[in-house]
Structures are given as structure tokens and as C-alpha cells.
Image: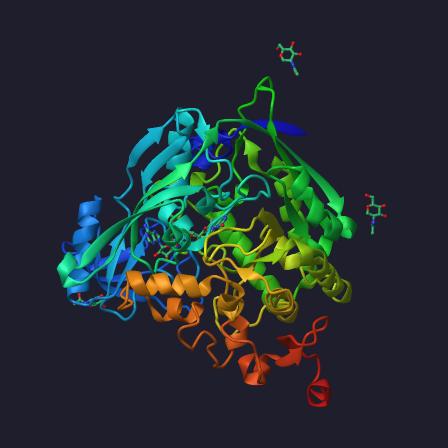
Length: 578
Ligand SMILES: Cc1cc2nc3c(=O)[nH]c(=O)nc-3n(C[C@H](O)[C@H](O)[C@H](O)COP(=O)(O)OP(=O)(O)OC[C@H]3O[C@@H](n4cnc5c(N)ncnc54)[C@H](O)[C@@H]3O)c2cc1C
Ligand SMILES: *[C@@H]1O[C@H](CO)[C@@H](O)[C@H](O)[C@H]1NC(C)=O
Ligand SMILES: *[C@@H]1O[C@H](CO)[C@@H](O)[C@H](O)[C@H]1NC(C)=O
Ligand SMILES: *[C@@H]1O[C@H](CO)[C@@H](O)[C@H](O)[C@H]1NC(C)=O
């Protein structure tokens, strides 16, 4: 079945929480503010976390104070005040969707500069086809505003709760090999950024960067370490419609198709269920004739408000399956998730993608699926891109793993399989280095850090095959520590980026141990302690990095023998032999 959609309605106007429509008394709950301060009046003594409520190391971050500027002038004052006293700073957003500790200021005494109220539309220029917004504006607001003037951002992440500043911070993207590709930052033609400065300049400095200025190539994907981006101008296109069809095939030809499919269809992507040996191909193109009328909207079920009860049930089922080692159960639940998704036509309904953001009031009734206030889903996300020239080999390696352990990837189906999206070479210094396919893999994370997951070894091997064998680049806003090991050396202009960082913020006030580690300026990315490999904090080199008391030992990979993974060893004899 083909559906015709307006580009704007792919994300479009929010509806109330879906349950409100069906059961009128039911209330639902918007995500909690990730910044919480006990000093309510002065916004002091604060904690910051992400929308999942958990960083990869499970710690919470602290800050002495949070500030909520409403204009660039107030941002300048905030940066100047902190710089004068050499305080550490970080930009925080309304939702804080990144998984790694990017938003944490160094130490407990830093300042959080929130973009929550830096959320105005500044200018829409119809003749130049550009839009200028403050950095706290969300993707949803941006898309709606552009649509009012019959314009569209052609490619964007599939989730509209991200802010413009946050998308640039981590290099967020949708899926396309066409035009300038799917990364939002490649459509930036101008931005304004406030950075620390010396006393002679009043301790803060604003720079306006335009296309052609090499500093823009650093600021477009900045990991938040160059200063506070206040305004962004993006290049748009005339609004268009799309025709979307999903077809399901077996995965025999996936390696070949992965290279060619994106060249044929402008918004192509794949959802791969390796244990089911199935792939859903998204055939998605711009419709040239404006004849086809359609007002279908895209509300990917994973992003809808889901009854908290359903989430708790899913989680409880998964926890039971994990603890019982119920491999078949996982495969059955996985198939169920897939077929439910298909029946719902992957969310192409008269609703909108991301309705759970509007959910009102009570998290005990409905919430976003990842909301940590309910006993909802808790997962790791491993997300990386592999150059198109290598992607076929990578897919074949994964298929070899599945051939050895057929049921090992059923657990991924519960999280809608592996989402594969196209990205292109970017001029941004920390952007993609070549045309590539991005793999988004979501999987069970135990509430207890020392509890291994089913097929722990296979998932770890997949991660290491990608990162080390095929030199995959990490998504800066997702992943576990392992994916960042050696990552910075894969960016040919990393030294240029570091020079600009040194120029903008010589004292490193916007830097933290985490950003220093991923930029290769500091050791400590790999945290070696008991059970560290289970959480992707390290690659195991000793059994204690796994869970020997639960039968998990450090072993070589099955397909990639350089991998070191935590494998379940059946009997104690085998333990001593291998
Ligand atoms: C449900 C969900 C769906 C997602 N879907 C996609 C997807 O389809 N495609 C994709 O690529 N990614 C996706 N992501 C990941 C997402 O792109 C990144 O995590 C993104 O950076 C989060 O944006 P945010 O506004 O929440 O920013 P945050 O996570 O709060 O911030 C990210 C970084 O940017 C910095 N920053 C933010 N604003 C500014 C500013 N104004 N100036 C300077 N620095 C700033 C922060 O300090 C931080 O370092 C998804 C995440 C979730 C939770
Ligand atoms: C600061 O916040 C923590 C909780 O995050 C609380 O335990 C502590 O008492 C607070 N301190 C002050 C001085 O309010
Ligand atoms: C996969 O599907 C193709 C047809 O699309 C078929 O020729 C092939 O035999 C199938 N492979 C498997 C393993 O089922
Ligand atoms: C466009 O719509 C008109 C009238 O509704 C119809 O006659 C025509 O065949 C349509 N053209 C295409 C290409 O579908």
C-alpha cells in the first residue's frame, strides 16, 4: 500500500495523546525537565540527566546553577559571568535526548545554560528560501513554521522533539543520499555563537559565521564545546509531497541492495530483523505531480505515548525472558512486535510522529516509551555509520553471526529491528567522512549493571566488528563508550576542529572529561572495572570485566577473532579448556 504524504505532515501538527482520543478520562504526561534544581527560586544545586534518566555510566551529573536566557544578550551575560570566574559551562536543552554525557559540565560547580526559552522564530525569507531560528527551537516548530510559507527542510531526524542546537551538537540526520544528504547541519548557511573571551572583550564574544568561513565547519557539529549557539539559519526547499511504500523481503540480497537502494529512492531506509532474516524496505520518493491528495501523517508507534501499563508489561516480559534465558520467548515477542508494527502500517496514520511529547500530566498513565519515571523500556543504543564501499561486507559478517546463533538477534526485534539510514560526506569537521549507511541498534539493558543480557557476546561482537573492522563512525549523541574508542582519528579534519576549539575556548570552560576523552585529549574513555564490558564501558581483557559468577567469560569473537566479548560458557570444564 502506497501512501501520499505532505513533507510537512511527515512530522506535522501534534495531536493530543492518542489515548485521550479513545478514552476521554485518561491523562498523559510530557517528559520531565532534565534539569532539576533544589534551590527553586535561584535555580541552584541542580542535577541534569538525559531523557532516558541514565547516562552510560549510570551516574547523574550536577551543576551549581542553571540559567534560562531568553535572548542572545542574556546568553552573553551568562557566558561572561561564568568566564570571569572561570566556571565550567554546558548548554542544556528542554529534552536532553543524547545518551552520552555531553550535557554534563566538568565537576559539580558548573553552570547549565538552558535553551528552553531560547525558542523564537526569527525570520522566514521566502525568496531566499531560508529560515532563521533561535537554537532552542524544536524540529517540530521549525517544520511547522517553514510549512506555513510552503517550504520544507527536506531531510531530518525521524523524531521531532530534538532542538536545532542539539541536532547540530551531535550531527543528527534522517536518511538520504540525495542533494546535500540527510544531516541537518549540512543545510546551515549561517549561525551565531557566543564563546568565552578575555577581559578586554568583556569576557564573552559573539561570532556570526557564514558559509565559506572554515570556522562554520567546526561550529556545525561542535559537541557543544565551542560555546552557545544562539541562532541558526537553514536553507529550505519548496514544500513537496512524498509517496511512501513499505515492502518486506528476505535479507538474502540486503548487502547488494544496501549500496544501491538509496541511489534510487530519495528517502529510502531499511529496517532489518536479522534473526527473522527479513528486511522492510522503505520506498519513499518525492511526488512530482501534486495531483495525489493525501493527508496521512507519520506517527511512528515507537514515538507515541504508549499506555504505561503496556510499557511495564513489555518490560516485565523482557526481564523475565532475560532472567530465564528464554530465547524462544524473545523470538516470539519479537515477531509479534514486527507484525503489530506492520498492521499499524508503520505509523502512517492520521496522527503525527512524536505525539508523546504533548502528553499531559500523569506519567503513571501514559508516557513516551523511554520515560524513566514509569517501569518502561531500558536499553542501550549502538549507532554507527559504515562507508558504502564496506557496507556489504559488514552485513555479510552479521549474517554469519546469525547463521551461527540464529536466535541471537530476536531481542532487537522488540525494539523495531535495526534501522538503516543513509548519510553523506559532510564538509563539517566532525561530520561524516564519506557516503555511508547508518545502523541504529537498540537492545535490552539490565537495570542491574552486573547482569549480562541474552546473547551479550553476539551484540558486543557486532559493535566491535563495526567500530574496529570497518572503521565505523559513532553517532555523537548515542552509543556506549566502546564506539568512541579511537573515533577521533577517523576524522581527517579533527586537528582543524581542535585548533578552533583552542581559539574559541582556550580555558576549556565548555569542555568536560567526556568531551576531552572523545576528542582524544584525555585518557579514561575505557573504564575498566568489574562487569565493565557488559555496559560497553570497556572491551573485556579479563573475565572479571564480564560476569564470571554468572557464567560469562571474556572470549574471542566467533566471526571476528580480534573481538573480545563476554560469552556464556555452558559448563565449568569448557571454562578451563578455553
Ligand atoms: C527518541 C529519539 C529519537 C531520535 N532520533 C534521531 C534520529 O532520527 N536521527 C538522529 O540523528 N538522531 C536521533 N536521535 C538522537 C539525537 O539526534 C541527538 O541525541 C540530539 O543531539 C539530541 O538533541 P537535543 O536537542 O535533545 O540535544 P541535547 O542532547 O540536549 O544536546 C546535545 C549536545 O548539543 C549541545 N547543544 C545543544 N544545544 C546547543 C546550543 N544551542 N549551542 C551549543 N551546544 C548545544 C549540548 O550541550 C550537547 O552537547 C534521537 C534521540 C531520541 C531520544
Ligand atoms: C542539593 O541537592 C541534593 C539532592 O540533589 C540534596 O540532597 C541537598 O540537600 C541539596 N543541598 C542544598 C544545600 O540544598
Ligand atoms: C529470498 O527471496 C528471493 C526472491 O526475492 C528468493 O529467490 C530466495 O530464494 C529467497 N531466499 C531465501 C533464503 O529464502
Ligand atoms: C490528476 O487529477 C485529475 C483530476 O482529478 C485527473 O484527471 C488526472 O488523471 C490526474 N493525473 C494524474 C497523473 O494522476
